[in-house]
Length: 99
Length: 360
Image 1: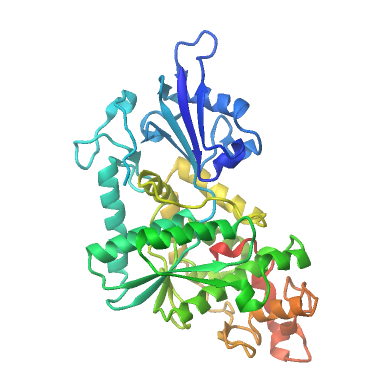
Image 2 (image 1 turned 60 degrees about the horizontal axis):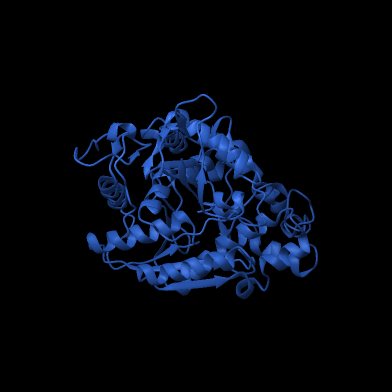
């Protein structure tokens, strides 16, 4: 399935300064659905080129990184357990850079 | 504003906003844990800031107010919201954008471009003051001379004064800064970690410097960073988000991360740390620095010379370590010049301070 990923608030610097990425992903072997947890590990492996600790902490995003799925705060959709569907738009914004 | 395309979704069961009960919730408020839609969010976000401004009497009708503008998220949202509230509630304020150009190529020059766009977007006149004009040195030149250690001390000390000097050029009555609740909670912790009692007791004040030339206020004192960034994102505001190329920011970075970790478990922690900071009582036997004026430039100083003059003297004499740390080389510490200074050994509060952009 196809997803649109957007990085902002300085996170784009971790993926070669490209803000918007159109990507194709598939559920991990044997899984029926693709969830945010799968996406984070996919992003970590495939998109983040430097300083991954600015993006991830443990198996989630680093506290201070906001996540929106289709412009909705992921805290409303189950965070790591949010199920993603074809054509979803996922936005990551760091709040940790200057004011 | 350009509304982002929201496609219907099953996620979160399409939960409804707990304020209007009509539209789909778009975020969870850290302060209240309420789930609210975008429209209700704009409303509560702006009106809460209005309440803070009114309840604390931050502004008076007819005042000239400078917004300290870095081009970053906080000051950009502050400019946007203040311009809107000034119109909506007839504050009767003359608002200005005030920016400091530290002279950092590839960082400040880019962020100043953002501020220049903000000038047009919000219709607020912009004034830029530069380190080069005020002090004769850009940060690039200072770093070339002193290297990457202590550079944030120079920058922080110079910025504080530069903002005051810019404010007096604009003849404003007050400077509003974008410090948010997360910043203040972090500063409370840092001041505790440093044992800096003087700063601890004033860092939670919503208005500071009332005894000085130009008071400063923090309309975002109770505003969560998450909401500021969400507001900027939903409204598609134009802001700049690159870390300063010279800022190692290690110590503050740890405090920041700690606060963010706490916030994830219990978002109220941020407001509670601010509350703790406000309620601290300083024992009367604690010696506080006395406020005076710098003999050289007249700026407020608890020492014979203000910190900027000491640092500048060091730079100009080719002794950049002057005024850094507890060394006895600093002018203010010369026992021959002033016995009293020796006793205070004044530079304690400044040593080891990392990036000063959040100085209070």
